[in-house]
Every structure is written in C-alpha cells, then in structure tokens.
Image (cartoon, rainbow, N blue to C red; front, side, top):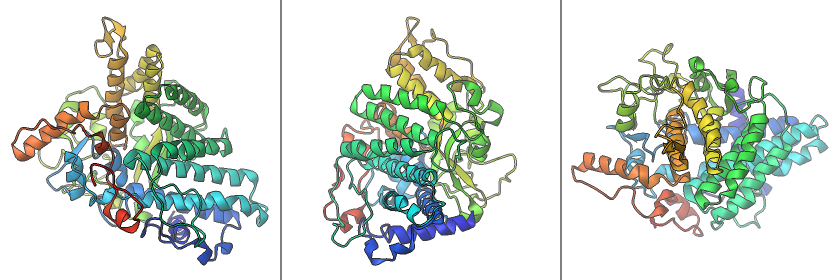
Length: 514
C-alpha cells in the first residue's frame, strides 16, 4: 500500500501540475514529457492510484494537519449531528452557527479540481495505450475509463451541492493557447452535461457481474451514484420524474454483485447482520453490504485526523448535545453505543466511535495510530434512499418495508402501517413517512457525510436547523434568537474561498457572501 501511495502522489504531482496551488492555472501538459506516460497498463494503474489518492486526500486530510477531513465538514458540519466543541477551530465555529466566510479553508474546491484534472488525463489518454501495450485489453481500458468518468462526476457532484455554479473543464490543460481562467458554469448545465452523462458512460464501460472491489469504483458504486444524483436532482428541482429515474438505478444496483460475490438484492440477506454491523467501518471489504469505501492506512498514509474521532480530548467537533442526550435513551437501538460515547461527563460527548474498534483499542491510543475507512456508499444507505424514492412515487407500503429492514436490523420493533409516526387516521401518510425515513437515515448514517445533504435535498434545513441554531446562539450569547438558519436560501451554498477569487478574476462570489 505504501508503494501504491507513493506512485499515486507522484502521478498527481505530474498530471495535475500544480493545479492545487493555483486554481485552473496549472502548467500546460505540452511543457512536460507526456509522451513518457500513458504507454502501458502500469500507467493506467498508476493514474488510477493517483486519482484515488487525490480524492482520499481531499476527504480525509493530508495525514499531517489534524482535523482536515472535508468529508465530515462538508457532509456533517452544518447539520444537527455535530456542534463546535470547547476546542473548536474557526472552521467548525462558522459551521455551527451558519456564519460561513470566504476565509473558511474548507470552502476551497481546489482538491476536487485536482482530482478532476487527473481524471481528465485518464479519459483522454487511456484509449491510446493499446497502441503501445498489447496487454492493455479493451476490458482493462474500459474499466479504467469507467472509474475516471465516475470520479469526475463525483467531484462535480460535490461541487454543485456545495457551491452551485462552477467552472467546467472536461479536458486536460495541455496547450498554452487554452484559457486557464474559466467563468462559472450553471450547476444545471454541470448536472446535465457532465455529471449524468459521465455516470452513464461509466456504467456502460464498467465490467458487469464482477465481485466488487469496494476500494475502487465498481458496477454497484456507479449505479448508487446515479441513484443518488437523481434523488438530489428530484428533490432540489422539484422534478418528480427523477424519482422514477432513481428507482431504475436502485434496481440496477441491487442486481450488481458486492464484495462477497452475491448480488445485493432488495431484502435483508445482504445487509450486514446486527452483530457485525460495526464491520462496515472496521473491515468493509469483508461485509455483504459495502459498495464503495475510502481506504486510509495510517501506517503508510499518516494520521487519519478526521475532525471527529476517539481522541481523548481537544476535538474541534462534538456530537450535538440534543441528539447525544436523546438517542442514548433508546436502550433497544444497538447502533447507539457503537456510534457515540454514551458515558456522561467531560471528554465523552465529543467522541464519534463509529470508525474505531473499541474492544481492541486502548483508551489512550491516539488517532494517529489507527486506520480509518470512510463509507461513500453502502446498502443500508441505499435501502433508506430507495424508501424515500418509493414514497415519492406513491408506493408507501414498500417504502415502509424498506425502512423497517434498517429499523429492525438496529434491534427495534417494526414500525406498523397504523403507527401515528407514519400514518394519519391509520393510513400511511407520505409526509410523515418521509420524516421517519429521514430520521432513520440520521441514526443509521450518523457521521457518514450524508446528513447535511439529506436536509438540503428534502428541503428540511429550516425545519431542522432553525431551533438548533437558535439554541446554540442562546447558549453562546445568553440572548434569545429567532433568526435560525435564515430565509436567504443562498446560504445553503458555501462561499468561494478567498484565494480562488484572487487567482481567477472571472469568478464571482456566491451571495450573500460577496
């Protein structure tokens, strides 16, 4: 793994050529010896390693600077799952109160564009490799291309969810005649011209019916991405037809094979059993449920210093006091003690235990000494998202059945169709069912980078976050507040990081941050 990581970092350095230093102002490839690369299967492997290395660097951090993992800041930090701690950094303080500024270092998209640059090179040059290496079969090349297309789509998917409109580059910057500075392209254009077409290309190219390597983008991962993208598109544009599109891709996912070689299916058979649920975060490649996870080996990559961890103290992020107090009251839910520290007193509320094997890790162990495997997609996530799509397309009965698969796996009794939680007058109520699914996703996927995107996708930000932010404001200032998140929905997006604007005069800041 160490050798792979060195190759990855070398390839990122050579192929992105400083794009992480100056946004879209990398040195054109015509000024380096590109002819020395992309001539063998080894170059395909090195390029893909570089692509994954660049992405995991962005999600987890650089292994040196602590608390740098954007996976949690982007997907969790602005939600009701987490709050600033007594040791909060400026990043988390802004997120907790929804007062983001362009100086917040997590509002920088450079690492995603660095990964896009590596994917662009792969998409352009992989098809040429069989001319030089007869072992570069069509299957090898197509699988490599599929991963590159899907990764480019995933990076743009993060970008439009976080910043909205953004520059569009779909080819390497390999000629001085090319314009290095680009204006922002509409998020809708990026969705319809890059994200969805790239994922459709990826699915067409990827080898079907293979046992999944869950550390790489595979058949099931591409289908999961497409389902996720269509769910986002349906929710944020009120285009109900896209819920039906999402259902189609959920079904394609269920037909794909997981890490154990069996098709995922729509039942409980391939959900990880209750007793070994924690393996999804400790050894995902051994589970039935894993679809795509990020591999971070601390021995070779350095500290997996995610902002929330099992650290003894000084975490900048803490579990929000409300969910910490309420969730642990549910003595039947087997996820609680496997996810958060339920003990009372100092140095317990700040601990997310989900990614650590507490039975074998001494309490004094530092996170620098541990590997962390962050989940991108898994079947439990997809079952609940599928339930949401079924509910939106009028199949409340099956939606409740999918919800109950996860609910009962957690040791809880099935929710009956007549339960007031999901029904009105004994009849399933779509709005109540949606809220129940969203709440189940909060518990099941706690700390997995999903909550903020769920709130935005389902238009629940004000409903959920207004009382949370008002409570936090009163606690901090002792002055009552009723402002909550606010009525300016432009604040759902992040500001562009200040250096992006300094380096590219064609960029315009998001309102209301300008």
